[in-house]
Length: 471
Image (cartoon, rainbow, N blue to C red):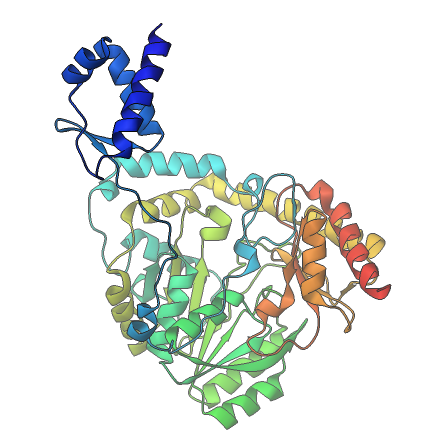
C-alpha cells in the first residue's frame, strides 16, 4: 500500500514540477501529507525518489526545490590558449615505465621492482617507529636529517681509496626522490638554455628533468660498454658544456657498466674542461655479478656530483635520495632545493634511515642479488629460445632491465600495440633517446611481477615481429 501511495505522490508531483519554474520550492511535507492523505514516511520516500531521478534537490533545513535543468554543452577552455601562450619547453610525455597494469597482464615494462623484492617488513616497522618519533611533528633541516646525511656520506666513503678525501655529512643534500634531485642539479649547475651532455640512450627521467629545467640536451653516443670517450671530448669542445650526466653503473636502459679505463678517460675529460660529471648511481643496490663502485669516491676536488636514490630499493612510498656535492656547487644545490620544497618530510627521512641501518637490510640485499640473477637469467633464456629475432646486445651484470635490439624494419609502435593486445606490456626504446633513436629497441624489466610468465612474454614479442614480416 505504501508503495502505491508513494508512486501516486511521485506522479502527482511530477505533474506539478512540469509547470513550475526551476528553483521553485515544493510544498512542505505537512502540506503534502494533508493533500495526498499519506503518512510523513510515505511522503519522504516519494521525495527521495524524485531526488534520485534528478528532478528535485533537498536543502537541509530549508526545503525541497525543483532542480534547474542543466543543458549539456562542451567545455570551452579556449581562453587559456592566450593566457598560457606557447610552452617554453615541450616536456616529453611520461614514460611507459610508469603505467600501472591489471594482474592478468605480463608486465615487462615497469621501472620499479615487484613488491616481493622489497624489504616490506622492515619498511612497515620503520614507519611505525617514525610515526612515534619527533619526526612526526618537527621540521627537519633543509639539507636533511643529520643522521641520514651522515649515512649517505659514509656509504660513499667506504669506496674512497686510500689517500682520498671522503665526503662529509655536510656535503649531502637530501631530496624527495631522484627526480627532484635531478631537476635541482640541472637548474643550479647547468641553467636554462645552456648545454648538458647526456648519454644516448639515457634515463627517460633525466630527459624529462632537463626539459623542465629548460636545459639544452646534447646527446653523446653510448652503448653496452658506455659512452664513446672521443665523442664525449668532441661534444665538450663543440658546445662549451660544463656538465655531463651519466649512469656509470648498470645504466638505464643499456645495462652498461664502465670499465676502469673508461672511468679514467671520462674523468680526465671532465676535469680538463673544468666541468661537472653528474653521476646517477640509481642501481647501487641492484648489483648481481658486480658491485657498483661510484666514480665520486675517486673525486675529492668537486668535479663529480653524486646522486643516489633509495626509492626503488626500499619502497616506492619512501621517495628519498641524496646528492653529494662539494664547494660552491653544494651551496647552489641547497639554495635551489630550499626554494623548490623547503625541506623533505621528516617521517620519510626517518623511515628510510631506519630501514638502511637495520642489520636485516644487508641480509635483504644479499637475497635480492640472488633473486634478480634468477629473474634476469630466466628472461634472457626466454628471449633466446622464444624470440630469436630480438637480439641482446649484452647481458647486464646488475640493474633491473635488459636492452633488446629489434630488426631495423620494425614498426615499433605497432609492435607495442600488438603485444598489449596479447596481454604483454613492453616499453618502446625510443623513450630513452634524447634525440632520434638509432634503431628499434625494447627495454624489458626483469624485476616485475610473475617472472614465470617471461616465456609467454617473449613469445608475444616474437609473434608481433612475425606479423610484420608476413604483412
